[in-house]
View 1: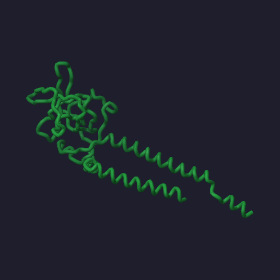
View 2 (view 1 turned 135 degrees about the horizontal axis):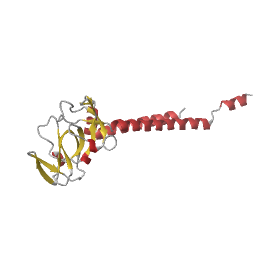
View 3 (view 1 turned 90 degrees about the horizontal axis):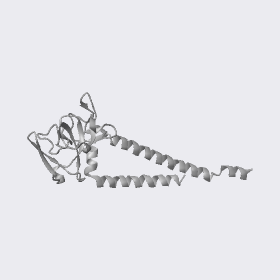
Length: 210
């Protein structure tokens, strides 16, 4: 009788293995859900990195946005919209325009799509149509004295700021964390790597010592 009781009390190896596999599967699922949610949130916010649109937004703010092609049609972009576009004219990029256009006493450049770009969030204030019927947008930061020195093609516009009754959805100062990450990316990667290694080793240790 004692031997039979002892046999019944021995842990079933298959049961223990199944439990461990379920824990691993649950951890993977939780991680996937986190990544998906993070992606959905991150693709609908823009971090403001300058004060060119002050006072409606300033450095460190989050602005809620929608994505071109998925959530709005580029044909519906209009004067007054605040958009995020791929800018070539930023001085640090060192780009030179392929063509110069003088319009309304301003000089604008038209740039080739060389991939040397930086996202800029400014407001559409007008448009320009060339002799071939191609439409370009004239864009300016609310807090800037001058217009952006680039005629922007519709396909350069990637996002548009969400608004309600002409009021943008802005979350003040939250974006400073993102700015810190961008400016200290190697440090952040190193810290995340250490945390991941620590948590991974701790989880494995717990699983195999139960």
